[in-house]
Image 1 (cartoon, rainbow, N blue to C red):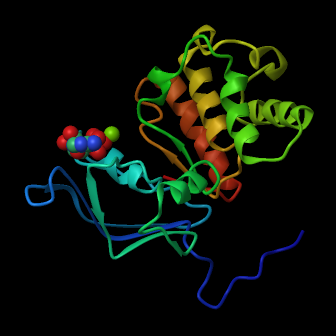
Image 2: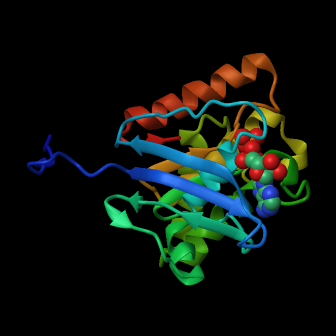
Image 3: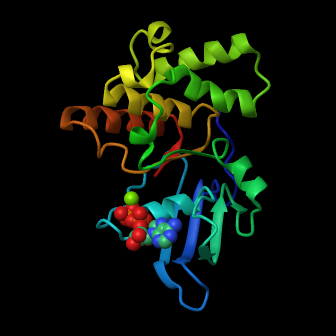
Length: 218
Ligand SMILES: Nc1ncnc2c1ncn2[C@@H]1O[C@H](COP(=O)(O)OP(=O)(O)O)[C@@H](O)[C@H]1O
Ligand SMILES: [Mg+2]
């Protein structure tokens, strides 16, 4: 087993935010929805953001993937992924971040999944767009990802439409899609809210397992 040499200052945080403010609306009338947020997530760490409904958790999460929307006015003293400044990213630069540098499961992902689409297709999308893997290699990787997130009988499940799966299996498939490109950071926005209590714990265990493998999650 080999160990990565740590730099003198330690490894860069997977994500670092300093004094984040996000406001919506016209510049002169905009009232910040998110104000003065600081956070830091290191590889192998899991950070939970807690707050009442409407307090800006989802807006903060979407800031890390450049999906706050065109009307948002985002300012921050630092907005870094893996030590790299993301302020002033173009739309194209953010597309390069999403999936590859930050995997994400958005808050409404479970309910907005197309029920007629095979779950394997969801996962294959990002592999097809962002890697040079052959079709065969992608198929193998999709099956491996489904197995990794605890979906039984991946060979059968991969062809099933998301509408044929339980909520828990669908959420696992979404997490598999989010980590398909092996991003160092995973954002899961309320990944358990729509699930039964027993299934909620399974999803939390799954996220904890990803963390054990050195990925940071938020
Ligand atoms: N695109 C947007 N335009 C205007 N207001 C928004 C937009 N997105 C979120 N908001 C507002 O920001 C506030 C925080 O929302 P959100 O981050 O979703 O809260 P939480 O996830 O903590 O429940 C809410 O009042 C919401 O209406
Ligand atoms: Mg939210």
